[in-house]
Length: 392
Figure 1: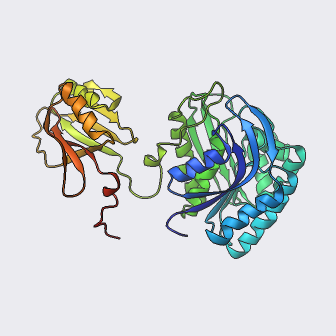
Figure 2: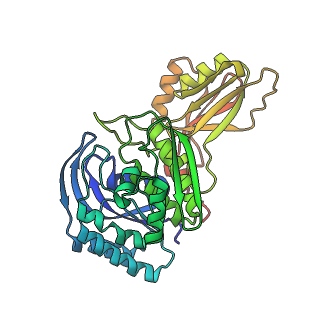
């Protein structure tokens, strides 16, 4: 696998940007992968429903697959809305050829039948052809209505075992359509079952959750995760995206993949810093005045947490007896450095010095919080991660 996981997404386009390839691209991109697409259908839809569907001819779908496979390469495949029974059969045959060259190529199939709004996205013949895609898939991710439609079994576990036995792929039973506050998902493999429990997130912004989940699974599999670990991390990605949904549209709004990259992903992620404070109210007022959003207010424990524009968090732990040695500086980057510093200074925030150009190609302004911790407002642009002296 290349350092950047290359994910081929075979799915329909959602003009509203909530589901389909739009959700897939956002998910793969936010997790650090490279998303490529073979568009199977063009839909006119929004948060209220699907107004029109235009299937893309199967030969064009195959041409898109061939274009990326022959040049860029593929580390995993995600299949969503497939368009037609003939397209499903042709895509399954092409993926079998890919598997001949790459036997371990992960293939994630989300058997899309009905949109979140209730609009039908696959006719009976297309659903009947899903078996051919499950034959080549590593894992299929049906929700409960889709699982029942694929097997006519009432019991979800029995239905999943039926599909595992018939097609050989693992089945992730998604419990989001169950009633009640508690939800459970189960990964059924030929010789193992793994389950996850959680509380339902109260939101109407659920459009694209299935697409997001399947794409995240594909990305993590491409990066070398086990099947169970890929599902666990993808579930976490979806849950945080639900909590961070932007609240768009009048119906089932899109989830918010935009900032989840700091919560789920490969490798070490620097996303939280804690400083010591002396006075709770002074510290809270100071960081709120800087423009940070307070998300935890625990004055009785002397603890406050703030969220930055990029999703990273900073917290203050109050300890009046602690001796503070300001040997570490906190840096907040902002594109409007000069204007922001001037505005804060006018509001009463004291800076030790205003914006200055530094030899390391950053422009910085320096101040201290009420406890004496050193803070810089700065702008570095490409010079932060890609200075001329960067070591490769």
